[in-house]
Amino acid sequence: MEKIRDRVRKTGKDGSVVNIIAHLTDDRYGNSSRRFCLTTPMFDKPQGIDDDVQKFFRQMSVGEYNGRFENRWFNDTLRPMMTAHDLFRRKKLKDAIEYCDQIAAIDWRMACGEWIQRRTQQ
Image (tube, rainbow, N blue to C red):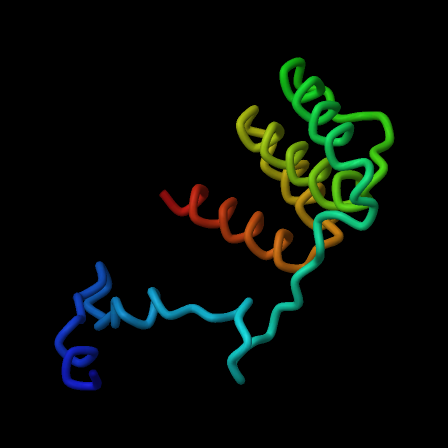
């Protein structure tokens, strides 16, 4: 495996060597010793899942994310994430980053921040 890893490289725009395999083995959410990001459960009130999902899709269809959900994840993670996404699409980068920073779940906050970063570097 190590020999294959050594062969799967490409040269970056700046001339640096990038190991492609390293990008495919990101295990920040797994159970390995390299784990550094705790995940957050999406549902803490299972009886409210159906209502929360329906409410979210109704709100998404009109682009307004307000009201309270039974499951905290929808209020604390999904709402700021969707707001950050909408603001980014409307070219309000500073506001998008501020909402991204409000995402309660660390794993989703990281993913949103990396998503914004990739798109601003293109």
